Image 1 (cartoon, rainbow, N blue to C red):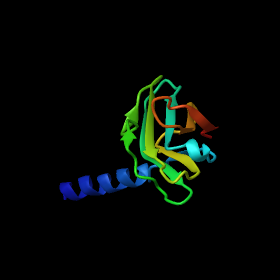
Image 2: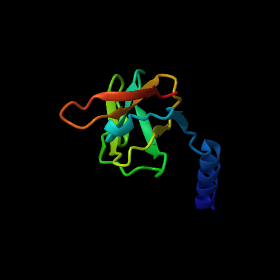
Image 3: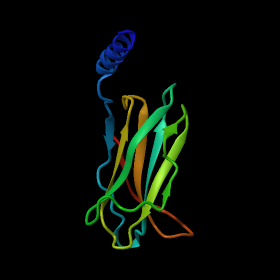
Length: 130
């Protein structure tokens, strides 16, 4: 009888929590023309608490999501920290950034950039995450 009460209490407690709500930041598309060969999305946590990533995606005009070749926005981002995720764009496609986080996006900012090849790695086009 006692176990049944404990289990019933656990079921009620789990039911009160509900599903996790994620907030999403999106950029407009960036396109660097024929000089573009790489895109990067940079995320900044300007808040006072860590944020936790649900997804980080680069959405290409022809392929979505693009396969990432770098990502240090993996699980969480500390207050005041910066991370980025990147992909090659050998077919010169327009690309946008999509970031989903567990917390509200109030104090999270970012920039999506189309970049030229190394050694310059020049910023050819950019758009803010909103």
